[in-house]
Picture 1: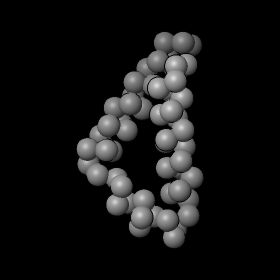
Picture 2: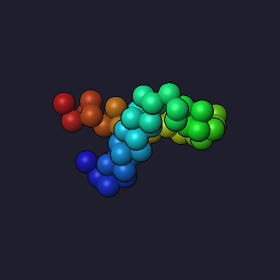
Picture 3: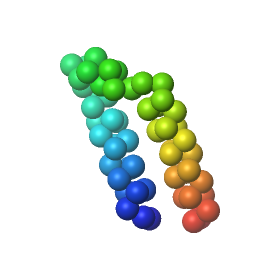
Length: 55
């Protein structure tokens, strides 16, 4: 796993943790633009494919 993949996992893990706390959801939702979400989905798909290729 390269550094970019590790950084991406850190990023999405933080969003997962933040989404669990109701007080943070409104602030979190402000950062989730359509472009940002599309980028996260695309990077997730790439990482998923990389994992499948390794199996």
